[in-house]
Amino acid sequence: MTPLLSLTVVLAAALTLTGCGGRATTHHKPGTTHQEATGSSGTLLPARDETGHRLRELPAADAPTVRAEARPDPEGGWNVHLAVERFRFTPESTGGAALPGRGHARLLVDGRETARMYGPWGYVPPGAHTLTVRLHADDHTVWAVSGSPVQTTVRLDGTPGTSPAPGASATPGTPATPGTSVTPAPTSPPPADAGRTVTLTITGKTVEPPPSRIELKKGERLTLRVTADRADTVHVHGYDRELRLSPGTPATLTLLADRTGLFEVETHESGLVLTQLVVR
Image 1 (cartoon, helix red, strand yellow):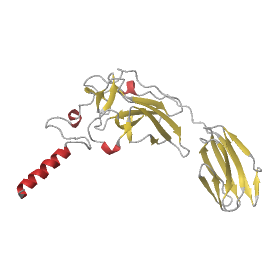
Image 2 (tube, one colour; image 1 turned 90 degrees about the vertical axis):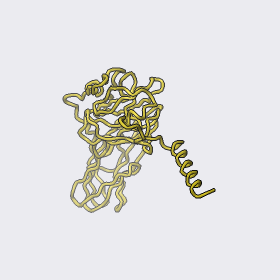
Image 3 (cartoon, helix red, strand yellow; image 1 turned 120 degrees about the vertical axis):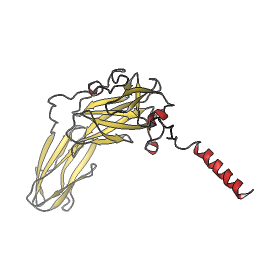
C-alpha cells in the first residue's frame, strides 16, 4: 500500500468514527441556530421562556418530571434537593444535542435565573422567597409539555408552591409571562422559626445547668449558647459541628436537628459532657 493510499484510509476511518457513537454532534448548517440544529428530539416550539430559551415539546408520557424540596441550611440559606423521573443529569454532554431524558436544571430565584444544577443537590443563598426549578436539554432548550416548561416551584418559607398548569406558560414567539411560571411570594413572608435556645455555663469541671437531655423534634432548630472560663472547643457528635470557646466570652452554635438519634455535646480539651440531644 502506497503512503498516499494509507493516509487516505486513515482519514476515512477517522471521519467514520467521528460520525458514530460518542457525544452527539453540535455542528449545524450555516444560517441555523444551535438549538434549531439539534431538533431531532421532540418539537422545537417558537415560544421562549423569560430567559430567552426555546421550548422543546415532548408528549407527557415521554417528558421528564421534577420535584424540589428546600431545607434550611444551619448557616443560612437553603439546601435544595431534586427528585426527577425519566431524566438524568448529564454535565459531560452539556452543549451537545438534545436527547430525551438528559440535561440539567436551572434555578430561578424570585423570577431571575441564578444558577444551574448538574446533580440532585444545590444551594440557594438567604434572602430569597420563591424558587423555580426548570429542566433543560443538553442544547439548553427547555423541556416542555403542552407549551409549558417542565418545572416546579417552592416558596422558601417551608410552604410548597405550585407548578403552572399545562399550556399556561409561553405563547408562540413571545416570552413566557413570569407570573404564569413562578408562584408569587407573599408580600410579608412570615419570619423563620427561631427554634429553641439553651444556655450553658462551664466553670472548671462544673456545667450549669447540670447535663441532661434536650428533647427535639426532627426539623427543629436549636441554638446552644455556651460561656466557659477557659479556652476550649465544643463538639456536637453525629452532626460534626464545632464551636470554639474563649474565656468569659459567650459563643453560639445553631443547628437544624435533621438527624434522629441520641447525640452527645461535649468539650474536647476538658472532656466534659455538656448535654445530650434526643431527636425524634
